[in-house]
Image 1 (tube, rainbow, N blue to C red):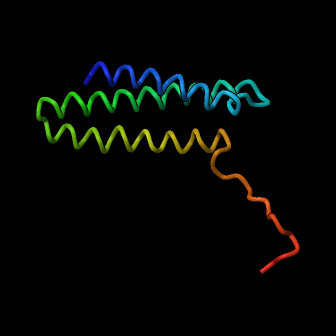
Image 2: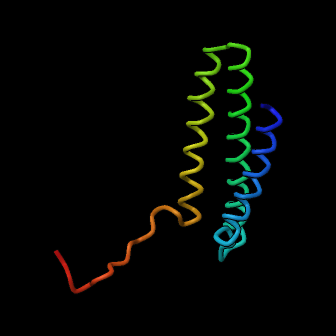
Image 3: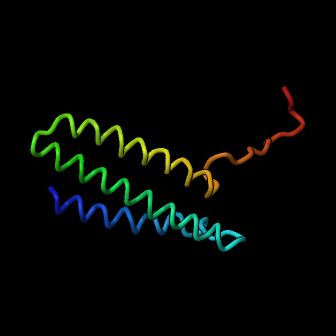
Length: 103
C-alpha cells in the first residue's frame, strides 16, 4: 500500500503542475514565484499529512491519527483555498448572460 501511495503522490504532483501551469504565470515575477512556492508548500504539507496519518493508523495510534487529520488536512485546506484564490479559481466575477433581463 505504501508503494502505491508514493506512486499516486508522484502522479498527482505532476498532474497539479500541468493543471496550474497556464494560470501560474502572472504579470509580475514575484506573483509567479509566490504561486509556485505555495503549490510546493501545499503539496508538501498534504503529502506529509497523508503519510503521517497512514503510518499512525497502521500502528494503531488513534489519538495521533485524529490529531494529524485535524492539523494537516485543515492546514492543507486553508492553503488550497489561498492558492485557488491567487490563481483565479475562486472569486471571479460572474458575467451576466442576459443583461437586459434583470429581476
